[in-house]
Image (tube, rainbow, N blue to C red; front, side, top):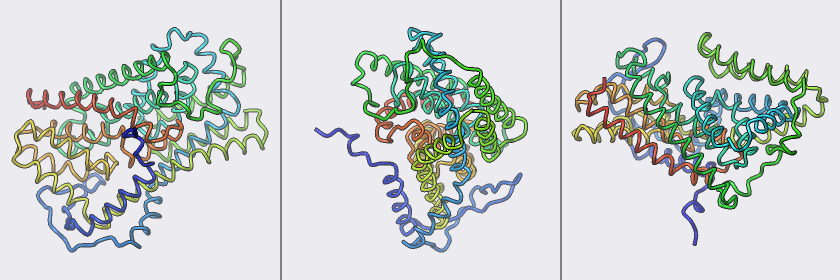
Length: 460
């Protein structure tokens, strides 16, 4: 009997299907635009200004012409993935990561493996809260090596790193791309109402950690029951007994350079306003310094770099395809039409249903526009006034938006960062869905319960 997940197409096929569907929608949906005004350097939607405009359907040739434009828009994300892969190729080839992880697991002992999994999930969660999303791609290989050393599989490694990072980034109480923009649009104090979002974020991370540990116990009881069975772990798993690992002086130096680079990234994000290009530059500098002091020959370095780029290529290809969806939506002028349609569908619903409906509707839009800041600028200027008319405070409308955008990122094939990090973990998308969908359901129930509580207490 064929299981439901055996029919899941690869993300490449899913994205191409979405591109075709969106292209067809430019013929079906009326073109429309909201008026926009520039505030603090960003174009903001003017509420109640939606108007239909002459249709600009995207033809077959224009659809394919949108691909290079999509890849151009996605260049910063594509490059940070490549820069991260190049940096880790040196650390991996010099055995620095393997020696450090082997020694760590030996010192802690496998009997404390569940505690280490919980701690790692929360560490990646904090990275999601403090640093961002794609910016953290350089840290994912560490989780892979640690989890494999503990007797886990690649699926669990993705659950610890991607699961913790995605959940915490999506529900972060201080997410500048969703909450920050929303508060600026609504005229609220920046990151006000943090207490409820912090509870939701911490609770969702706790659910993720519990889910990871539960899966780990299942693996220990029966390794053949793992969703990640048969996946290629060549070059990722430890190659010798734990007691044999030692960290050399050169390894300590390379680790210090790597950690110093992460420190510069953290400081740069908070103090210097580092964006994705600056973080890519830091990764490249770390890679060059490590390469020059690694003791590896030019041929060894070149081989490692080319292998890293080859392994990352499929993920970067998909990132460009995901950006193509946005290009077609804009050329067909139906992005605002979708926001307007969501607002019309919610108008007149009961208050509690409106809050949850706003979240569900935002989830659908998120599959087409995975950029949180892009969604915030396009939909919140419409949703916040609508929420007021439905007796929902701006804070509740922003929370509903954040839940709809953030939680569905766990399985969004249009989210380039997710697909890229799955590539780092060597986890096929269909297997990831088998693992993550039950957890997504639990987190949605938790988040919607918090949303209904917000409505009940008049969250401000």
